[in-house]
Amino acid sequence: AQKVTQAQTEISVVEKEDVTLDCVYETRDTTYYLFWYKQPPSGELVFLIRRNSFDEQNEISGRYSWNFQKSTSSFNFTITASQVVDSAVYFCALFYNQGGKLIFGQGTELSVKP
Amino acid sequence: GAVVSQHPSRVICKSGTSVKIECRSLDFQATTMFWYRQFPKQSLMLMATSNEGSKATYEQGVEKDKFLINHASLTLSTLTVTSAHPEDSSFYICSARDVGGDDPYYGYTFGSGTRLTVV
Image 1 (cartoon, rainbow over the protein chains, first blue to last red):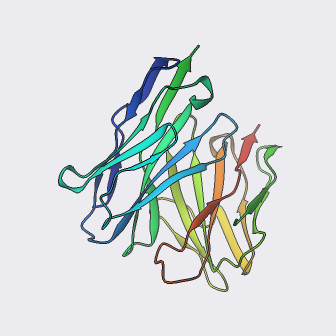
Image 2 (cartoon, rainbow over the protein chains, first blue to last red):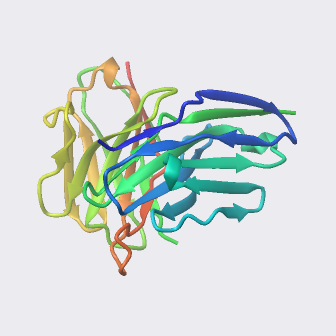
C-alpha cells in the first residue's frame, strides 16, 4: 500500500527557532517522487520541492532544507531561523508511477509566533 | 510557469441546488486533471482523475452521480456537485498534469481552490 505519514499534527515555535517537519512514506514502487507543499490560510498549495527515489542527496534552499533517507523511508523538512510568514500547513506527498497519483500526508500545521 | 485557474474561489449555495467548479490550464495542455477535496484541518483526498475525452475515474467511496466530472477539452475540466447538501461543504482543489518530456512525473500544478458552503 502507498501511504504518507506526518505524525506531527501541530507544531508551535517562536520566531528564529529551527523546526523539523517529519514525513515517513510507504511504497512498493522502486520509482517514486516525494514532495513538500505549503498551504497558507488562503488555501492554495505552494510547491516547495520534489525529490525522486534515485536521488538521495539532501537539498538546501535558503532557510529550507530537506533530508531524504531511503533506509528509513523518511523525507524530513527543516526550516532554519523560522519566521512568522512560515506559519502554514505543510504537506508531504508521494507520487508513484504505477498509480499515477499524488497522495498526501495528513499535514503539519506550523505556527511561528513572534 | 504552468498556471491552473480555478473558478469560483468561493461559492455559497442553497441545499438542493447544483454547483459547477471550473479548472483551466492556462498555458499548457492537460490530458489529465485531478480533483481533491479537503475538509477543515484535514488532508487532501483525491476524489477522481479526469481524462480528456473519456470518463473520469473515481476513487473508492466517491459518488460519481453526486460529483459529475467533465473534461471536454485539453484545458478545461469541470466538477459539478449535484443536489448539494451541507455535508458537501468543503474545499475543492483541482490539479492539472502537464504532459511533456521524459519525466514520468510530468508536473502537477494546483489551482487555488474553491471553498463551497452549502446552506
